[in-house]
Length: 232
Ligand SMILES: Nc1ncnc2c1ncn2[C@@H]1O[C@H](COP(=O)(O)OP(=O)(O)OP(=O)(O)O)[C@@H](O)[C@H]1O
Image (cartoon, rainbow, N blue to C red; front, side, top):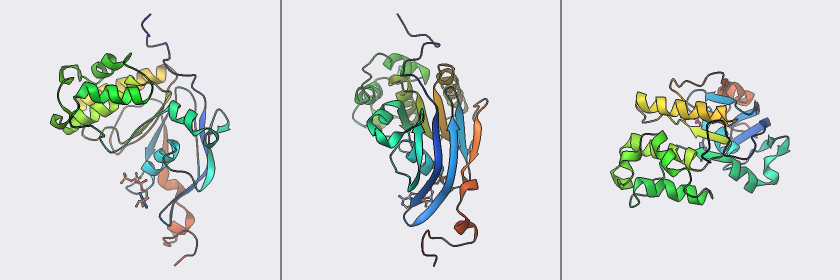
């Protein structure tokens, strides 16, 4: 039977939280004592000026970076205890459009879906969701910036998982495409999925909690010192 909007296609979502997170990049503390909590169906919008640490926080959440201090928990358990399980529950879409130029659009999405162990069950739906079906056989090298971005976002549908981590997902999208993304976000949340996204642009995310990452800038930064540890 075909899955419907109210039938979650992923393992049961559970509360996802960060406690006392300290992020150091290079020798610099980007944020400290950062806390968040996300419930199934919830959304967190990361805001803050350039360099505040929005991308860094998303990378921590995806375990692409490790916190210098603090923990990330899923259903109360430290995600670092089982990184593989966390990888299965997370879909991360970053700044880079990882499109293979020689594969066509459909093959690109199918490649990612296979990598995530999802097969081709949701492939056609993924393309339709982001209005890409008519471009399915266009080689990756011929896609425009907005088409590449939509192709990357199609991975979210092609390989279902409860936690979407999206770094400035509206970059290069026209208004109509932002509307498609807003629809996909709403359907994901209606199934109990969770979303964390960073943005400098308007995007409809009803009921989202706003997390101003620059509020967690370490005091050393406020006083003008740049380095964590021995202040210069
Ligand atoms: N690979 C790296 N090594 C060292 N420092 C880094 C690295 N990547 C980012 N940083 C630093 O970490 C800080 C936070 O960067 P980050 O990209 O997380 O900010 P952001 O809020 O996402 O910014 P933007 O709005 O410009 O995308 C910045 O000061 C940046 O210079």
